[in-house]
Length: 229
Image 1: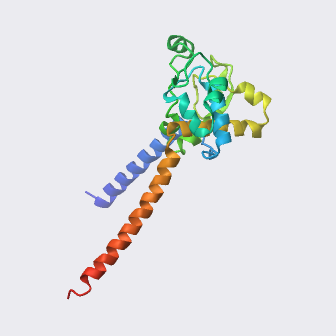
Image 2: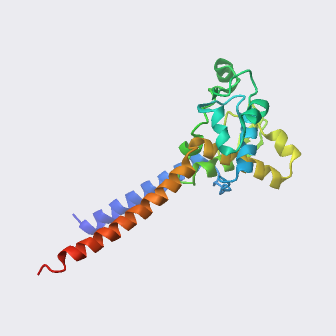
Image 3: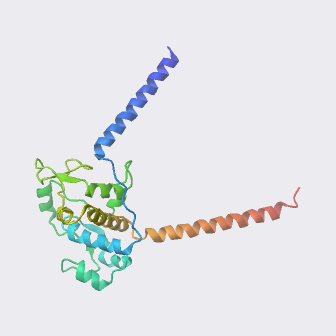
């Protein structure tokens, strides 16, 4: 058997398989993802994002692992949360539950809307971070009268979800709408891990401590072995 020819066939087959997988993945994710703005440390942006989330997302989507009280971490007082974000008679210590009946949601959309607590972490992929996906997705809706909702999406073709922010998009300039979506995405990114800034700070100090410990250990090692031949 011609080994070189056999090897070339294997390499060609692998290349075709990789190319096919890439094409399938590209088709699955739809359009390329745009880079989401990073305002995870901007309390004003996070507060606006929380407001958009409660007013436009929480009607259908829950955040079952997020309690309203945690919003104090982004600078809101309990009174502000009660007055502006608690849309039902729920208590501030409760989790953020959707207003819609799951049975009705499935009848209207064909599927129950997913929980959004960690959506910004679960949607990361080859196209970018989960925040990039959500930012591109929320800006990717367009009119399509062939769909039951009247909307389609460039990033998620044939999506069952309607364009819930269409009124905002119609009333705002393109730059203002992009900023609003960015605030919403930053809030979703924060909600997926509220302690992420603390984790990063602790991680930095741990690395500094380990670097100092390595230096001290190295110096002790030199001092211990300097007289040993």
